[in-house]
Image (cartoon, rainbow, N blue to C red; front, side):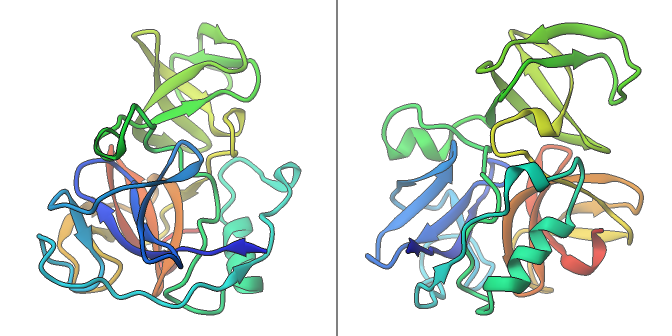
Length: 240
């Protein structure tokens, strides 16, 4: 049986880094594919009121059990349907969502404080080409062996992610990384918000036709996403 953490906030500067609360009443930051203990500070924005600071208690739901994630073989580049299917099948409570896909935005560089401010990292699951543009036909800049750790810029285009490998900037297919990082097309002009509600602070505009990186949680009709290096929340109805 898998313990499900309640999503109670999001980091203010690290794209897609979410603050979770476990059934042990402790806080965790989900990064590098696993939850790690973290002390919430002013660096975190809580979903309870969408305001800055830690002066209000987060809204927490009772933990529930979640089914195993979809088989990685079934994931397709840019597929949002797999995420929604898993949510509809086993995530009925709106505020007690397990992380659907591996959150690669963040890495443990030491203690909890270092984790909260870690860069966005991902690891190749196989040999992956570093391309000059987000296209299979683009010029190959380098070939990254499996197990190569790269930094994500937060930019996505189609099924490709912009990454930095050994100081070189380029694009790589999202399916080539551990966890099969998901992307989705934006079908309606939408605002990227700091909290999963219509009153959350607007961090920026995301035009229809652009691609966002999905960072793994759905709360109250909003999906956690990263666009142009900024992590936030978009209405589920705005992505395909």
